[in-house]
Image (cartoon, rainbow over all chains, first blue to last red; front, side):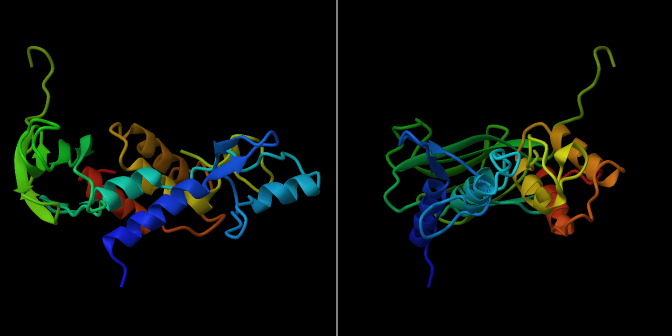
Length: 162
Length: 74
């Protein structure tokens, strides 16, 4: 069975895999095409060079990893829904004593998801909290799945004098 | 929002390539400013890029974007 800690281990492996070792030995963040899982080589890049194919840096701008989505919807656990229920199910490691994801635009509102074990880190009290436009809509003493309702949408902006 | 900045053989207009567009939409759905993905959708489905050059999970990606924005118009 796969548990939250397994997911976090895999996420870390995924993150550190996206690197490249430069000729001078420096290791830099890198995302390219076709990672060799055995030795970390970017296979397409190596082949382009071996074959003197141009451009040799074809894959350097790959936008493939969906890191933000994995962190927001997976690790922090904001599970997007079509209805007005906000569902948050964090999969963070059990030894994290605080975390916060702030200013997430969601269904026209701004969400904040924060956990503070001691209550002293953010000064917002202990436990897990979900805020929409600054107002609490869900809370729990521990990190677990919580749901809340979105507040009614803010009135549409009107032009000055209108 | 795209895959290639260099000129790449086999890619389409502006070196776009549809195979990863699902990833782009899944990632871009969290941008506070919806304009980038609105434009990207218009590019693929308004006669700019060729969305059939490779298959991708477009229906799922657009639906999942809606679940973040709640905006039925896009």
